Image (tube, rainbow, N blue to C red; front, side, top):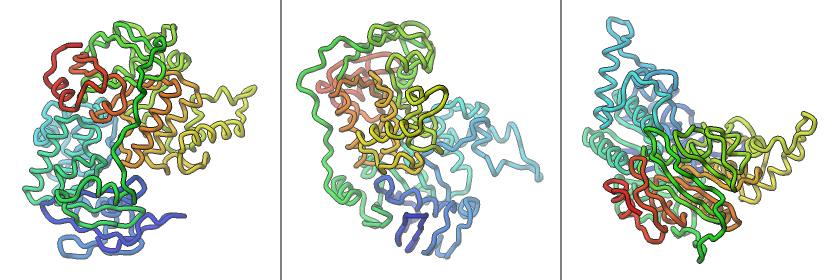
Length: 496
C-alpha cells in the first residue's frame, strides 16, 4: 500500500500511509485509537475506497472495490468487533457467503458441518459444536469461529484486529501456534494489538501510525523496545505505572456483601466483602467464572444459591432493577453490544440509567439532561467535549468513559468493571487507570475483572484468584506477582 489517503467529513483519517507486507511474515500495525489503523485495514479489506494512493498485490496493481473483491484475491479480515450472525449455526457462519456446493446446489448439513469441524480442529477447538447456534457461544469461542471463517477461504493474507483481546493465556498461546503454522505456509499476517508484550513475541516487523500518518515503517519487532513504540504512538514517553495505592486499607463497613453465591455449572459458592474506596480484583482464565460472578451480582443472572447485600439491603435475586436501585452499576465486557447505544448521542448513553431525574409529568427536560451529562463527562475528561456527538465516533477509551459517566450520574455505590480496558490503546489506558483509582479514592467500591494479570495486580487492593469457578487464593495485591497468579489459575488448589 503506497501513499494511501482517506478523508471523511471534517477529518483526514489517512495521510499518505505506506504499508508493505511480505509473504510468511507477521507485520504488526500499531497506533493509538484514532491513529488510522481501522481505516487502513478497511481500505485493505475493500470496505473503504482510498482518495489517493496505490495498492499492489503480488506484484500487480489492484483496485479493491468491495470486500468480496479482497476475499477473492486472498485477503481476509478478522475484525475486533465480533460479526457473527447470532441466529445461524457455527457451520453456517463459517461458510457464510460461500456455502459448500455440489453440482451447483448449496450443501446444507453433514458436509458443511464436517468441513467446519475440520477447521475448528485445526484451530485447536474441536469442542465447539458446528451445529450450535453462534449466539450461545462465549466471546472467546466466537473469536475462534471468526478465525475459522477466515481460514475457510484460500487466503494469502489475514488481517487480525485485536485477536487476543477475548482470549485467556492458554488460548492466546494456541493463537500464536496458529499464526506460526500460517506463516510457515507462506501466509502473511497483519497483526493489530494494544498488548505490546505480544509484539516482540509474535511479530517480525512493525509499522506505527499516529494521527493518520506512518511515523515508522517496517521496524524490527525484536529490536524495537516497548518504550520506543509507545513514544512513537503517543509522541511522548509514557511510563507503565499504575496509580499509587492508598497507604491504609479501607476500614469502613462493607458496602457489598456476597454470601454463599453460586450458579450451577458456572461457579461454586462464593463469599466476598467490598468496602467503600476499595478495588477488589477477580483474576482467572476465560471460563473461570469471573464475568458470570459479576453478572450474577448485578442481577443479570439468577443465582442457584446465596444472596447479594448492598448497604444492608438484600437484593432480589436475578433482578437488575433491584441492583441498580441499590446502587450497583456494571460496565460490561462487550461495551459496544451490551453497554452502549452506538447510534445515539453521548447524552443519551450517559443519561440512560437516570432518565427519571429529568422527567416531569412524562416530559423529558432535555436541557437538564444535557447539562448533567456535560458535568459528568467533564469530570472524566471525556473527549470530544460534545454531549451531542454520536457515541460510535468516539475512541474505545472515551466510550468506556461514557459508560463510567453513566454510573457517576446515577450516583452508584458499587461499580462492577468487566475488562475495562479491552480494545483501549496504551495512552488511554493510563487515563482510565487514573480515573478508576480516583473514583475509589472518592469512596466508590470497585469490583474488577480483567484477563490481564498485571492490570489486576496494578489496580486492585485485594485479589481473588479463580480456577474453574472456585476461589483458589485470596490475597493483598502487593503479595502476588504475575507468575504466582498464573500458577494458581492453571494448577492451583483451594487456599487462602
